[in-house]
Amino acid sequence: MIDLVDVTFSFRHKPFGNERIKVVEKAGQKTPESKRFSATVSLHPNGVPITVTSLENGAAIKICTTPLTPLQGHNVFGSNNVCMLCSTLICAVLDALQFEYTERQRAAWRAGKFTLEALDITYRFGLPEGVRLKRILEHIRLTLPWEFRPAVSSQGIGIRFQVPRRNAAFLLYDKAQKLADQRTRSLKYLQAVVGEDDAGKIWESLNVAASNSVRVEVKLDKKYLTQHKLNHGSAWTVEKVREVFWEEMAHLRLESHVPLRQLRDKIDGVGKHLRYILELWAREADLRAICPASTFDRHRRAIRAATGIDILLNRPMIESLPLAEIFSQANMRSDFPKWTGRYPACAFRARARRFM
Image (cartoon, rainbow, N blue to C red; front, side):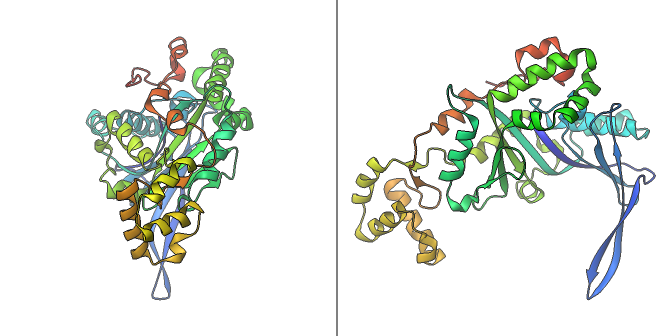
């Protein structure tokens, strides 16, 4: 699902909302450089608030929000169709602002004529029987190399980390706990979209869907999108969303923990100097504090070629947990549970079915 979008599109309008003046300091002087006007709108009475910003003196509009909650009342599951979600959101926000637009403009947005400065992609994976989500999160936090900068989320139950030398961050968290913590607000947003009659049954089903899965969220910032030429909506298809997600997942190297019983054979199979480096790595020594960066990179390449071990991203195994099986395409939940057929309002455009 697409969990967050930061989208900007060209649209001539009268600036709206509260004025914000951006001040830039140059040569010791602070100079007003641009004006921004921001406002908060909702697509439904009591619906989730959406922050909308008027840019460039009324030449463009910026929207930063989760697209799913305004459109279907929640973000437990949802579509991966970036252009469909963003174009629908753009038109709905303009309707809420009482701005008129043409069918030609609508078609252009549907074709992806907008820019993206942030995009969060989320997939859900089934929990193995008898394995609690907190155990998986704790295992990942303890076994990830320091270079990933693993940290506990400031709110709820979750962990954040980033693959070294990449600009994509990861967030894994307990969605069921988040629903429980924010029940009053989340239920209100759901009722605003689906109505009070069905909200109770849908809410129960959402909690079940959230409690039996683990969510992996890949957060792509402006730098990542620009570097990979993905900062335009037209660059994104459902297939591209899946491709980018699994490309970033591959950098986690979930099978990267080498069992200690197999490590001895690998260490004995290399030359004396590399064996010394591998011995230090097996003892979890800080190799990059021992040798210069260029030397470390040279040893890393040589050891990876000789043994398959990556001394930057791999670690000796501490505890056995089938992470590669848990976070696999075979274990991935569908975009929309089957029960959403009875409640189409909570599954915006459920035609985008699972690709498997």
